[in-house]
Image (spheres, rainbow, N blue to C red):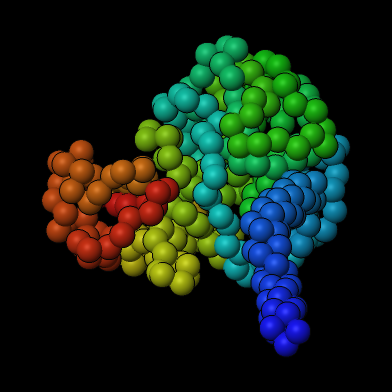
Length: 324
């Protein structure tokens, strides 16, 4: 009897001890499912946040949304400083030849507030960044068929002289999405794309942001610092804080302002030519400092000096490097 009782007690103790273990096993089996659900939730949250950015781009900067007028910011106070994220860009056209630069045109005695890029009629024109189409209209004596897009990074981009619109007002678009076809409508003497970049209606020379010859941006960020002024930011420290790509480049870029004085214009032109002589490279997957140096016929030591890095620096895909 005692022997049977001992076996019964032992069986009871073992079964009682196994209950927490069974619960732990169930929790362990459930954990991967919970992680997957959290991952799904995280992706969905990010998607909703991204859609909100596109539905209301730069709403903290712009006072209103108006789809009838291109420049509606006459009385708006400009920020003393605003950081513009240039990552995630797409060139509006694959054509590389700039036929008319930003600046004063003595021949016409007026300011050219964008740049003209060579194009052929019917060439696809694409959105430079993710954003929302604000204006789609026709101006007989100006832009002709024009599209204006507001972007979450604070920029508004203008695409003029199109032969055809491929976008609608209030449409959200992704970088690289077709928004029109090149043409020569409005005040135009030949087929080309007139391209402008603005912040709250203030013109920014697109050449400060885009390198059309190399189909790339000039840096990861551009800090707007008032009319005609800005600082180019190209590399990041380990905490993600941006630093100037090179001190002298930032200093040369800051304060370059269009002027009607011919001597000042000449000095600005020389500064811009000097900046263009500094080439840039966008790091691609699998590239190393050695392979980049060989590609551009330079040395790793020169790359490191130009970018303030060491030979042991880990490169990031999409990182902007300067070379001469």
